[in-house]
Length: 382
Image (cartoon, rainbow, N blue to C red; front, top):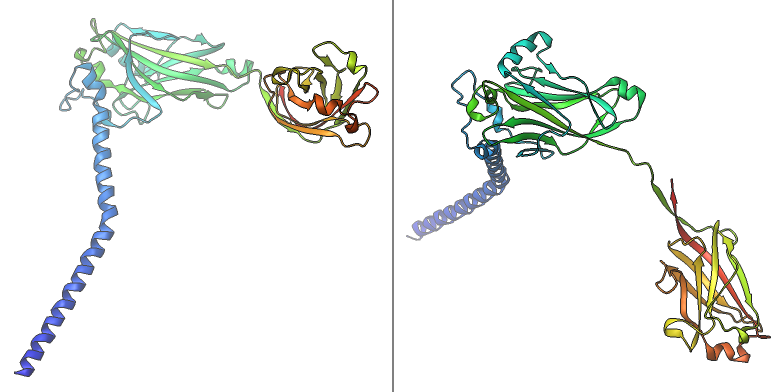
């Protein structure tokens, strides 16, 4: 009896261990499967977004996509998600740079097969350069276009030789849609760079050829007519620019100024002669009776740029102790203050300290000022 009970307990223990191992195994499988499940969900969301965005233009036009069962159907690539740098929309404004109208799109498509399968416009001028609009109306021309019309612009090589600079231009390709009386456009939102070794830019997949075979979509009208155009906005390079720098090794950093007959000075302010420090001209300006909040109680002292510079300045301003060299020094550091559009203090020294003969700031009715320019910013226009 005891033996049977012992065996039974042993079996229960084995079952318990087995259950624990199964639980651990399931937990590990779930942990490793989670990222793959998340990626699968993201993939499904991306595919749904691609299909949705591919139909946006068709839904806005009020037309169904071309039937895929016919040989004239639009390519299935119409459902591709557009790059984030490309806008595909409609607008009322016609092309601003050049426009081409075909009396019959189908006839043009046949005629250009002997011309590299492209229609090449006459040269036109935009931004000081000559350009040509290229339209490829047939399938897989250029190679890789599939069932799309392709549009390109080419800058004239002679324009680049005469003016050998990189040309940056924003390009927008357009086609007229008669059903809504608007222009369908495809725009690269980033400016394109043209130069001697890159003279052409375009959209390989501008619009499905099937849209130009069915008048119901509006891109052919009045017996087969169609209209294409282009906006070219040439961005002129900057001609002036500035360089900001910070000068710390200042040549001739010290300047001294003595103001005599101080007690008889009755003007609101006095300015020193200009002096050069660090390659820049400066002046000191003093208000004997103070300015602003210091009026009537303190002397005001400022460092000012003689050329009206407004940069960052670090300097030490001093009123000299003419007896014991116990000078009063205050440091300025920053951008110009509002009082004088310069650097300084309204309350630099109080009248009490200034007139205290034991402190030596006023001797023989004269006061001495000193400035030491430690560093300043400068902006050079080139």
